[in-house]
Length: 314
Image (cartoon, rainbow, N blue to C red; front, top):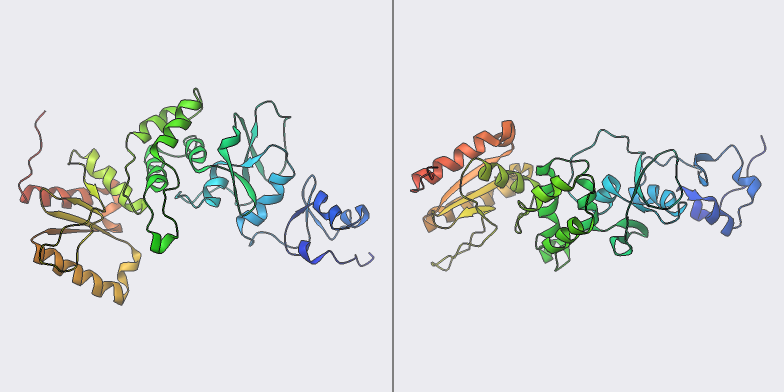
C-alpha cells in the first residue's frame, strides 16, 4: 500500500470530521485511506483516541450531528459534576437530538430524542453541552435520588473562590425547579421532584451530602452545613462540615487526604480548638459510611443525646 500523505498537524493526534479535514485541504482519496480509523459516518482518526480528554473525543460526534449537544453522563463529566463511576464503555457518548430532527443511529453514540431549548445548551472547551441544570434533570433518568441530591448540592453550593476561581454557584435551586416545571411528563421527573426537596446549599463534597441524608433519614435533626463557629476567645475559628449550634456539636468528614502528615497536624489542631470552645467533635470516615452509614448515624446520635437532644415521640 502506498504511504499516505501526512495529515495536517492539527488533525494528527485527535479525531476529526470529514468536513473539517476538507477545510484543511485533505483530499477525499486521503480520507478513504486504510490508515485512518473510521469512528462512524463522517468521523476519522489517525491515532488511538482512548487516552485523549473527553472533550477532544466527543467533539466530532457532536459537530457531525446538527442540532445535537452532549448530554446525560457525557455532559455530567464535561461539566465536572459528581457522579458514580459507570460500567458503561467510555467510548459511548450521550447526545440529545431535539424532537422533530431526523432519526440518528451512529456507533459510539447513545441518542436521546427529547425536547431541548436553546437556553439549555452551553459550551465546554468548544463542545456543545447541555447546561448544568438541564444535565441535572436528565440524570434523573439514570441515577438514584441520593445521587441526584449529591449532584444538586454540588450545583447550588457557593464555591470557595480561592480554590475554584469563581464567585457564583453553577446554578440556583430556582434553575433546577424551572427545569422540572418546563419538562412535564419527562422520564425521571418524579425522582427529580423528590430530590429537589432534599437539596441544600453549603455541602462541600458528595460525602458530606450523603452523610446529611443518612442523618436526616434516621430521624435526627437537620444539621447546618459549613457554618463558621464564632470564636469568642479571638483564636482560630472553626467551620464544621456539618454542625448543631444548639448542641455545640461539629461533625467532620475525613476523606482519604486526612492520612498525610500535614493534614494529621491540622486535624489535631482542629480537635484542640473544639475542646477549647467547649464543642464536641464527631469525626466520620469512609468506614463509617458503609451499610447505609449506620455507624456514622450512631456516632452522631450518641453525641446529640449526650448534649441533651431527645427524639420527638410521634
